[in-house]
Length: 440
Image (cartoon, rainbow, N blue to C red; front, side, top):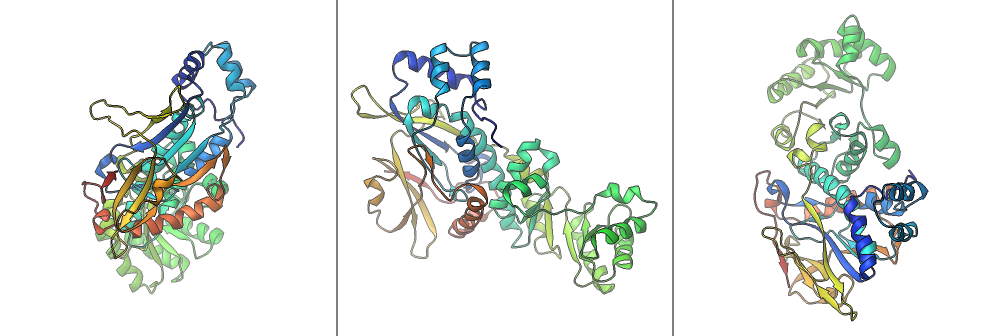
């Protein structure tokens, strides 16, 4: 896990630095923001995920001999720029929405204050992490709420890239899932893992009964037997006959699930297996989970939909320069004016406003001296809280955001943040953000 992350970037990040070094502007103090102009898929809220991964990647953002040799041999940038990159260490400040928090259009999820050269170099790395992880976490959060408290397992490794699969498991867990099928995610992040057998195991044996007997002999009666390889009703009967009424669970991976689940529950009860649980895993998304939430399903396994953001595989985030010091050392706000791509310039702090019942009612971005400045103490005429927290100070990563500790904190933070949202936020229909974002 010590591999350099320095070349996980786009060429133009380095060529901009090269040109800025030659122009004498590379070391101007600058502020960059990572944000989404809108919530892709017309979601009602987004979920911050990837913060811990980004901070870990930042620690390994170093240009070693191999990286520098590649840049030199391929004449990517000048020798002077290569020399500058050889000594690169991020030494600035980073503030952000803490992982697990919810966000809305315009929310400055990450604010980077550093020299232009140090900050611009992080653009692609930050976007590649946050765009994917936030998309997965947002989809997972919607599914988790739709499940009405019933556990969900992430099992989409085979539907995305091998490294993305690990990231997806992490993001889904933060946003409410209880486990993953991915062993690397379990090893690296301490996420509970699950899984027993697929249809191939049943087909390997001479009969379904022999397959069930082999699985129970190896894993015990608390295992989950897959009962839909041939005939579901007969599969259930065979499963109980083999394992007894103490069978842990049966899994259903096909059919008209609301109808099938009801029949299987009735059959299990008839056979005396009232405690045997039912789990379903058939191309589920938030809508099918919601439809099954009030059925006798006990747990869900979600694959393709969660690792692809349920139709929104990237959150459409951007990373923009919003302020920099001029030649006289004075701060200048800058913003893009392009049609449909306008941004709001200036250093910002963020407060979330609540009504008397503790329900979020607005996000307020305060233009002024930035996070940690005097504007954060401004009286907004009601109950509010600061959203941004320090992630990196003078190049040093702050504690509590990475590793297993950071994931646990993010999971609990997400639970609290979602509980504060108005009821409309839980709607699965396309619509406007649950709360508005204001600038002042």
